[in-house]
Image (cartoon, rainbow, N blue to C red; front, side, top):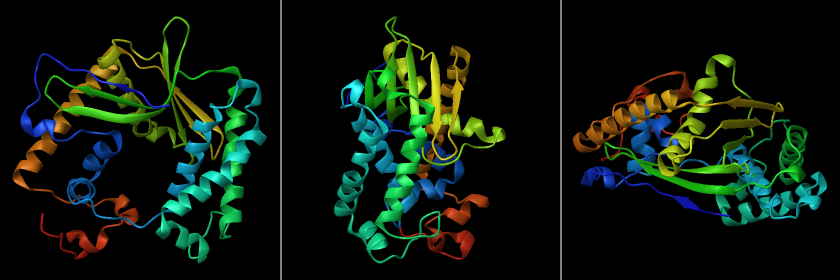
Amino acid sequence: MTAGVDISTDCAPPPEAAEWALSPSRALDFKTCALLYRFRVIDRLPEPPSLDAARGTVVHGVLEKLFDIPAAGRTVDAAAALIEPEWRALLEADPELAALVDDGVAECADGSAGLVALLSSTRGLIDSYFTLEDPQRLEPAEREVLVEATLPSGVRLKGFVDRLDRSPSGELRVVDYKTGKSPHENFEGKALFQLRFYALALWRSTGVLPRLLRLYYLRNVEAIDYAPDERDLEGLERQLEALGEAIARARESGDWRHKPSKLCDWCSFQSLCPAFGGTPPPL
């Protein structure tokens, strides 16, 4: 199910802001490294496929389709039956990803390779979901719902919410599935940034402040809840407007500076980064 929520304000966005939108992942990219943002958003450079990312895509697809089944039929076995078709469809659509599995180039977390291992590890994550929640007892209002909002400065927000639950009284709960491990408590704020971003977009578009934000971490079977308030989201709004202005300045000036950190170890663009002796391609 896909739906969209949009808002407009009395303040029309400037032309340069109307050409692009800010998502939670791209906002974090820019905060991490402006050059990383440029490579992904401006240059749109390809990145090597990842089996971990693909497994996350499959899990999200399974959990979305699970709620197409009548409540009584939402069993762990029914969900498990969706896993292989999701994997096969994904591999068929992405030959580069399929080559990793077929050739045994990439390894799963347990050291084994191949589709059988991927199916098994995915089944483990789906089993974890059923430990955290009983899908027979709820009816989501939306799944994979597009939320959009335009802030007073003209900065556009855009993203997809994994699941939106609505109580009979109209209260909203935003739910996001994560296939990795839950972060240390010192890093929970960064993990919740995505859901706070969605909460702000929903609040500005519907006038309803989500009552609860919930992260399900399937790898270590943990749930993190956060109840936003108006002051919190107003602070986030100011941060995003400042971030949007910084991105607009970089787009205008062409100055996309790299920012070395420990996260560079996981970057796909080291060969193009000055921090590693590389040279970015022409803008």
